[in-house]
Figure (tube, rainbow, N blue to C red):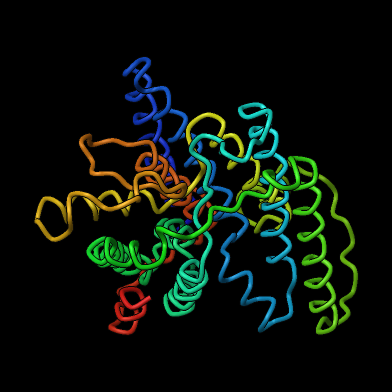
Length: 342
């Protein structure tokens, strides 16, 4: 596509997003959270697409290419989020008493089940080529794998719900919920978190530097309007800048709506369909009181997380079109297998 064609297509998508915003605003009080979710989703999609923020891809760059910037972006996002979340925790729950947890926070049982699930999730990322949040923003780039990865994740949720009750009774129901402020207070927990993240950043820089090759310094270019536009809309953003923005968006979203996540809507759709088809139980033991990306049987067309994900894809689509990074192609059987299997 030529640049004028790309800009025209981007303008159409942006107009559709603006109409969606206006429609949610017209709902009044009931639409406030949905409106914020849409705006936050658009911002999140733009940041992910412009900075290529992906857990799996960034870690792979460090391991295979010894490029540390992507991992630094993840660590910076975690650090900014830790500072922001701790501030919110302290405002909502001034005293972290042992029997209390911050409302809606992602604090769940810790056991071998969590470690095993994390390992399997990592395998899924490696097979499909991205984490789920990256698959959503790559929909906006025309990825041939991402649609099948999302369909596969939807099916995976269904299998998880179908086997939930016996597995929950076997292990998760007796697992311990660990929240560091219960033991170290807010200050101690934040300092420990930042120290661990700083240590990981040092290791990433050391490993990346050991495989780096010297490059000639690039002379600074004079500041022009065209240069600024190219920096914002064409060139990839700095990984650290992307990490800072991801952490800030996550903090604001938790403060206004709920902890940020992209999987809750997939889980809710799978659960609603499974219950309707009598494939999963109506009641899933303990799931609705676990802290995490909670899923529910949907009774409304629009949800905060669903609107957020739509905004994410739309925002990514707009910036990918402008940057010339919308490159769709027909999927191959390998693409289908990678996506569904992962």
